[in-house]
Image (cartoon, rainbow, N blue to C red; front, side, top):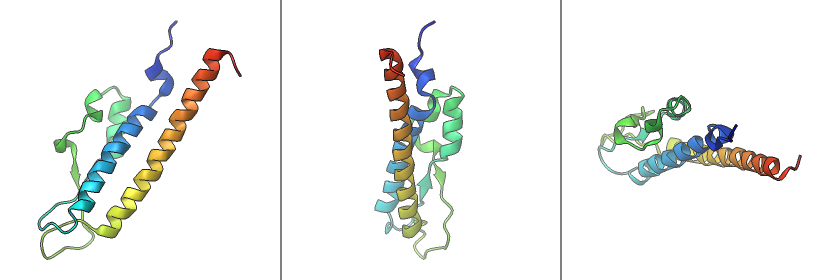
Length: 120
């Protein structure tokens, strides 16, 4: 029976890809914080990861039609829905989550390497 790398690594590579895409979306929100009429977006990380885990390869493909609008905490006069503090907090949390996913993936790879080399 052969080793399936996708099966061995689990959902962690997909989580990293989605976290990286989410970082780009949040960075775009931050960059457009003062653009009149700009609507803040986000990725539904959990739903996309669940779809990827079920084998839906399109869940990992970046597509603007998969983006969701972020509901603003308060209305702005110019129609911009970016809340700077909220976006900065989301970006920081996403960075921490990215690092966590990277750590889990690294642990999986070390475990596979140990198994291949016969180490316990």
